[in-house]
Image 1 (spheres, rainbow, N blue to C red):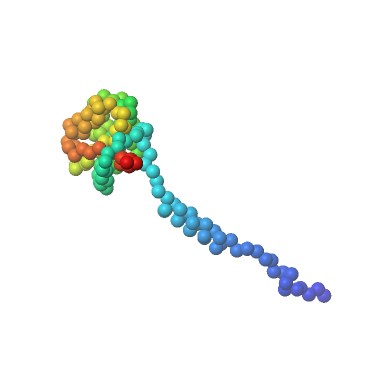
Image 2: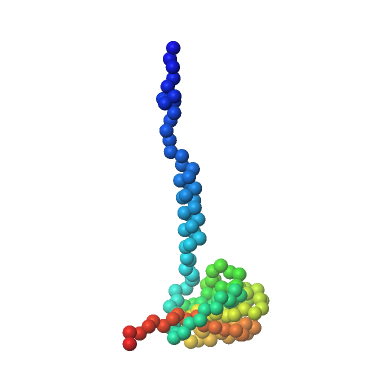
Length: 148
């Protein structure tokens, strides 16, 4: 008669459940702690200013203007700016109207490249004003400290 040895029947193994739990917790931690950069449709280098003030304005209309005068418009409910097909004043106004949906109390933020023609900035301001958005501000970056 063959007797079984209890040590022969036991298989040794590694329990992977705690390891999987730790990996998922690390994944959640890194997802929550990651900072996201604002991606833009246009390549823009902001002009410098001596003092910059950031306001967290939940309802804003963002008009981006590249160095060669191309426009992109982002309404308060949009996830990203939509690039315009041309720079005509009527096109800019239609894009603003479509992006805002006639919302009231919006602040217009103009992000213009430092090489943007003055005419393009005035066109954006005029289109915003004609649609009733009179609060207009400009986006700049903080001036680099000089070594003096």
